[in-house]
Image (cartoon, rainbow, N blue to C red; front, side, top):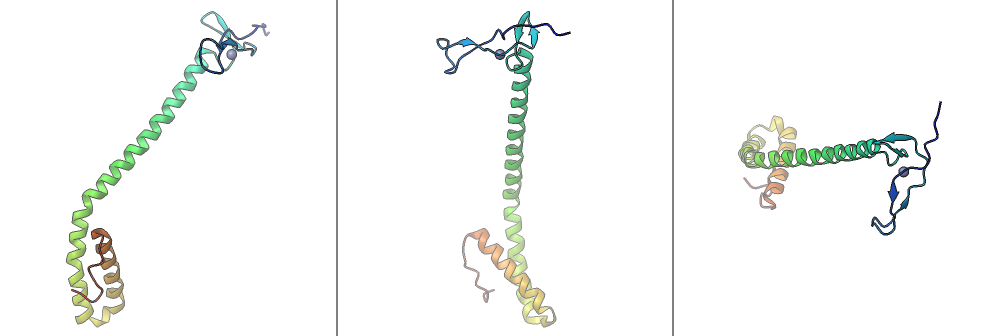
Length: 131
Ligand SMILES: [Zn+2]
């Protein structure tokens, strides 16, 4: 059994001002707070839509916050990582000279370490043959 509720009682405005308001024009589907509303303007639908938008916004800000925390953590690790690489480089170069059996592995380590140190310092000071 369906009762005809008539038009939605909400007034809408294309320019979002009080001068250009006119009746919604959609058929009412629900009655809330004693007034008929369409499924766009019923207060419960409007509230649900706002709650969904707020949840989406919260999720977006949570993701931004998590990304900032991750970046801050990486920045905190920077001095230790650079110090470790700077300590490792002479050992790798010693190995290149004194342990020719590991030549291929040590050469690729040296290239990676020199690249990382140069990138961290923003320089190209550490030439391949220095150390
Ligand atoms: Zn409406």
